[in-house]
Image (cartoon, rainbow, N blue to C red; front, side):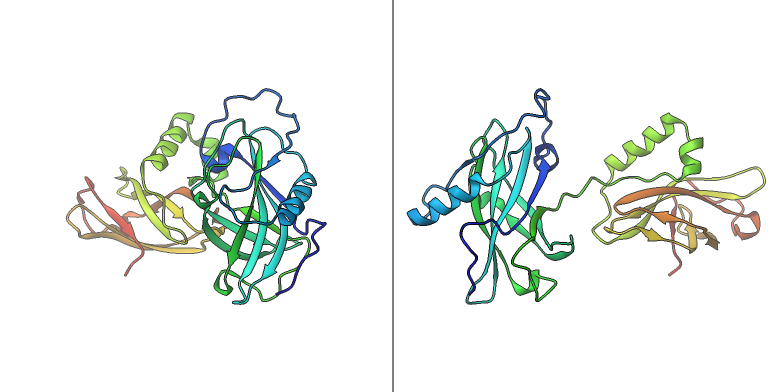
Length: 293
């Protein structure tokens, strides 16, 4: 085990809005520039020495003040235990005027350049109720399987909350300009009523299907990206089945500069010319579209 100097914080701070982390609406917007100091709060029943508490109190006083309605992780030190687990000590801080409790939260360990060194979901309910405007020290244990590197710096690292934004709508510029506000709102409401794709999953959701006067089949889809990275699609083969389960059209589409942003759904209309529609009067009361098996 190696030991960090006790008179200096070795990690940096990360700050999030309490509304983003705790899913609660911030109603008091007054004095948003107020600076709030957080008082050290040791978990009741903790068995720490007076010397350790003195050091923690000193380091807590070195933390930068928070703004209203913020929650922060302030890095203190990193140690390695006998099982070669990484013990990351940080202050969990809150500037709220009320006590708060946490649930399971994914945390990421970042290097000095912002690179991700590790990731793990912690049950922050274990830290107990955090009093108003307080700062509670806690040890976060990362095992080898939680880390992406064998080399973790002693200084300049940061422990941060991994806040995932809700799955949202990604409109192409042409759609943004041509789609009525009412239709945009309907698409947003649709996203709110269906289960988002699983992490890392990309799938297709049918929105509308019709055959125009020329006999061309128009299929409008939501291309749903559940991954945390943008995806580019250059070619997309599709097969359409009607309510009877019969294949009524299939074809391939070439797409230019087509990107679906991370954790978003993008609507797009695909037109099958009459020559690719294999059924004269398909039953489009229900239908399904997917890449060919």
